[in-house]
Image 1 (cartoon, rainbow, N blue to C red):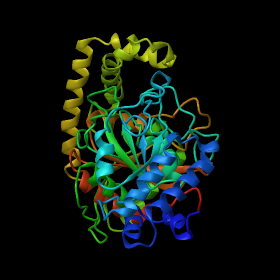
Image 2 (image 1 turned 45 degrees about the vertical axis):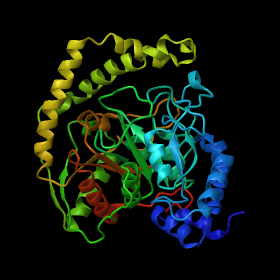
Image 3 (image 1 turned 180 degrees about the vertical axis):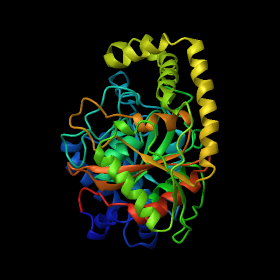
Image 4 (image 1 turned 135 degrees about the vertical axis):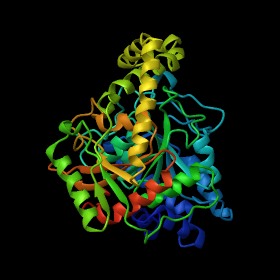
Length: 441
């Protein structure tokens, strides 16, 4: 059994946990065992894992305990979304068509995490290919509600206190939405900031690797690891108040009153704390961005997943996925090129708007996680930013009328990931709410 300090460490930060391992306060083996025990105890209700590498993780933890400090995540157990290849564990991409599949090498994000000393606890559950057919994962705050998708397992496992860090991917809203519904911090970096090598995707213009954590500082640490950095500069604890663009956007009428009220409250709290908060409006054409995203993602899905559609295992694919692939194959080249060109023009206009701000404050989801597991929820407030390739962060700030998390979304400038994280760190201190399901407030 793990000692109390190892189990209690999961109420701390990833940085503190790694520091505790390297100082000898606890061992990686103790932390991994505590994490596994929590994950196994909760799996019947939460279904957050596609597979847990119990023997592999314990063996790797013992190796870390025999080594000198290997990197920024030395000895820390983490989760890997089951879209990323792992040599030591099966990788099914959330699909029965790939059941038992064993890649011969790790994805780039996995290799970088291992190089930094992380211990891979297991593969977190995902929607099939990150696209359709929701997995069995439930919301850690109420198992009758969706955790969101497609990075459902990563968001649920982090929010449930099983692990402090997990990878995710986003093509539409697959990081921000589940982070918001589960009450974790979710970070989608600038498109192209992290290598997608070895991670299954379906839209080469949109697929983005990202991360989940319990706080902004841990997300920043993990982002540095996934960029291959040997050192991580801590976020400022005394930085200036950010310039915030209040951006409800043209789809605000689709949000629940509670979500809009929370967005207003966060803006007001930040203003009282010294931030400059302005409402810049939005450029023309933004209201069409959902259609452009749909055109681009469908066109690319119809070509990226064509091998699966034509394979002998096609009968194992979900009917909705097959329908979407077929629909994507019928999106013509001209429509695709027009959508791409229009999105580039919109990106220029949005960049000009963001230039006068450190961060945009907007909605992450229309409201609390909906009841039922047949859908992963509405991605309306995520698709536009994925289309534009901008960095986004979901920050839990309140509980809604049902007692489930409500989050805001922060959007930064292209390749302004560090500036976004700094602003989010400041806003977190002003407006964030701890939502770990073991210690609800």
